[in-house]
Image (tube, rainbow, N blue to C red; front, side, top):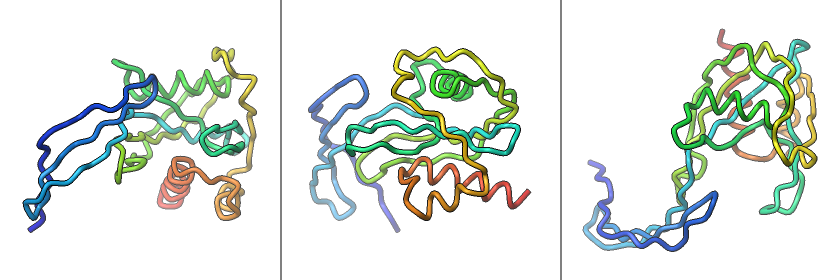
Length: 179
């Protein structure tokens, strides 16, 4: 029978605005000690936003960590005390200038469970209503409207190449086919 690892000690290495890093000493299933490096990150939301013309609203933005512009679905952190649905509304207004009339949960997943604890809640947002952009850095985000039928092609070609966008879009396409 599988047995979970047991934490013995924790040493905090770094605490920043977006992430933290700790090193835990654990007892493995075989009784040995091992180190586990864990990137700590708050829960997040990822949103497949679909407009009245059946287009998926994506954002193109520069991602410093990978050194390139990526085409992604709107997403962001859940603030302390904030509910995921409220984060969906806030992030859509901040990133694409729309508020959703309807929000449905698609599912969720851990982004990097091998070394991090970030969990993403995935949602579908429809009945979009134009709303004033409120984010300070909107000049670094380009809104890209893509016909829903092209999303699989963008994933297959590698143009959409971040895990959260791929997972959420594939969840959306799966749910859409099974309804």
